[in-house]
Amino acid sequence: ELKVEQNPLFLSMQEGKNYTIYCNYSTTSDRLYWYRQDPGKSLESLFVLLSNGAVKQEGRLMASLDTKARLSTLHITAAVHDLSATYFCAVALSGYALNFGKGTSLLVTP
Amino acid sequence: DSGVTQTPKHLITATGQRVTLRCSPRSGDLSVYWYQQSLDQGLQFLIQYYNGEERAKGNILERFSAQQFPDLHSELNLSSLELGDSALYFCASSAGTQKNIQYFGAGTRLSVL
Image 1 (cartoon, rainbow over the protein chains, first blue to last red):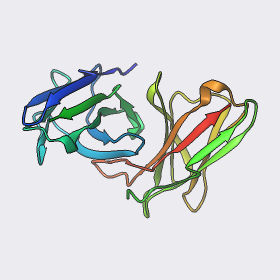
Image 2 (image 1 turned 180 degrees about the horizontal axis):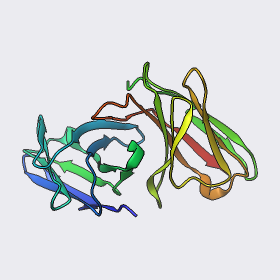
Image 3 (image 1 turned 30 degrees about the horizontal axis):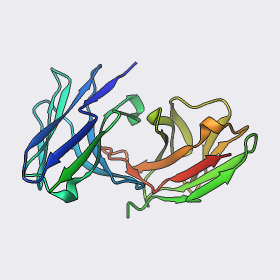
Image 4 (image 1 turned 180 degrees about the vertical axis):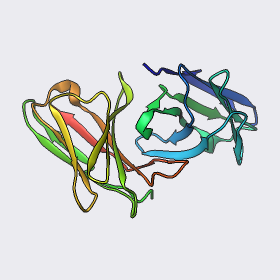
């Protein structure tokens, strides 16, 4: 059974600070995704990482993938309040269905 | 707006009842996925259809069933509802490219009373 573990599950950080969310998964996969979910809303695709060493950046968010360690990271640089949301990593199963982590609830405070 | 349409947005029903959730995928997407999101189980994959055929099954209960129609819209049928079926049900669609990004609808919030 494929397991996807995120940590931390809850994160409160000050504006302007940097932090990293970690996503470990238990079996080989060739696709890793990061999604964002605002309270009561749907999931928005942030990044898809397809190969070992892949790095993607969008604004203050940067995602990376180490397939050998089965680890992906989502790095937040100089956090702002608008980044407050829940962030999910997901690993593709055969047939491309996604197996999600429990999510990291991020709160950015002044 | 992801382009994936789900109806209804909210559904309130009683235990033992049956409901149908509907999903229209993005234009051109052949794959449709159903997920359930609840506080205790998190986001769980239920079932996937590709161009009308069932492609993959996840943690879908026998009381639940789905289908994809020739116009590619999909329906998720939930029967003999229990309190524990209360959750947010998402539909997602994808084009089946190498990246295969799944685009999620706004969800249907089901409350079983």
